[in-house]
Length: 73
Image (cartoon, rainbow, N blue to C red; front, side):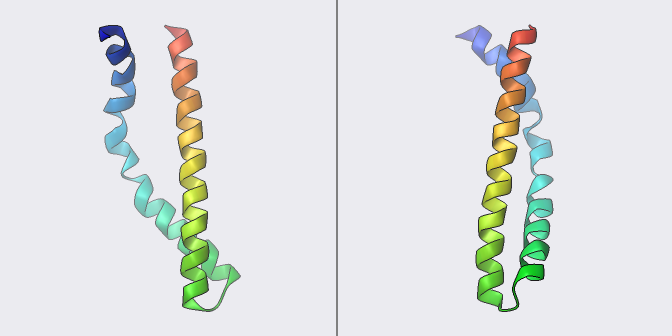
């Protein structure tokens, strides 16, 4: 059990930096949605869906990086 926790320490140490992604993703998704639509409900709907896609892909990327670093040790 302990070696598994030791492998997750680098990931846990970087979670503080992940909070910087939240305002960046929100602003990017709102601006991108506003370039596609004119009404506020449509903008918010598209921004929400686009932000979820960004977070999913960020999570997949983090998972891939975590798996590849496990094989390096």
